[in-house]
Structures are given as structure tokens and as C-alpha cells.
Image 1 (cartoon, rainbow, N blue to C red):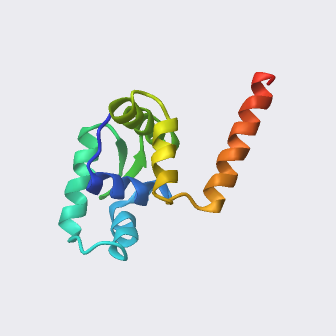
Image 2: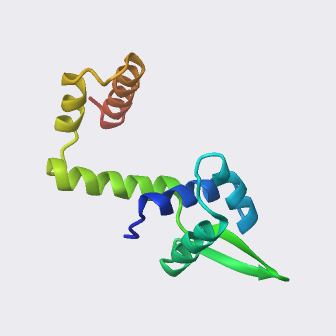
Image 3: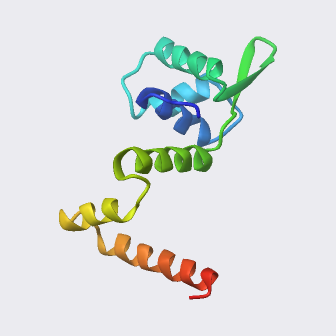
Length: 125
């Protein structure tokens, strides 16, 4: 599994927003949210290419970047890894912790109920 730093993930988010993209597109998307210098962003893109999280094509004098991993697939793998490391693969203790500290909104609760109901329907319960 590809491991991304917080900064690399921010670059991936900018690329997932719209691709393929030139470095200038990625820089423009990140300029509102970060104080990073253009060179820093280009360095991060280079790291992502080395990690094979991003692919590129050269078109004339420019490089065009495309994510080599999907956002949903990456976040799912990271979520499963997080659950394994901290909760022995169980989701209930995670949700319980949020519920006990009152960090679950009514919208979160409604969405969780809907997910459980859909799962039960698929399982024939």
C-alpha cells in the first residue's frame, strides 16, 4: 500500500479535484489552502511520481499529471489499516468513542443507521 504524508495527500486531493492537470493547475488549487512555495509543490508531485501514486505524460515542454490511485480506494485502504492498528479491525469501538465524547452529529447517526439498514437488507436480516 502506498503511504502518503499529510502534504502529499493534500497534493493528491488537488489532483483528484480534476485531472489530468498541469503542475500550474495543481499549484493554483493549493494556493488558496496552503502557504507552500511553487517549488515545494513541484517537489511533492515528484515524490508522488516516485511512489507511483501519480503518473505523467510530457506534452511539449509541460508535464501532465494523472492520479494513479483513486481517492476512494486509497481512503478505504487507509481506513481499514487504521481500524486494524487501533481497534483490532473492529469499527464499533471507534464509533462508540465518538458517541461517548458527543462528536457524532445527528446527520452522522442518521447516515450510520441507513448504512446498517442497507447492510441488513443485503444480508437478508
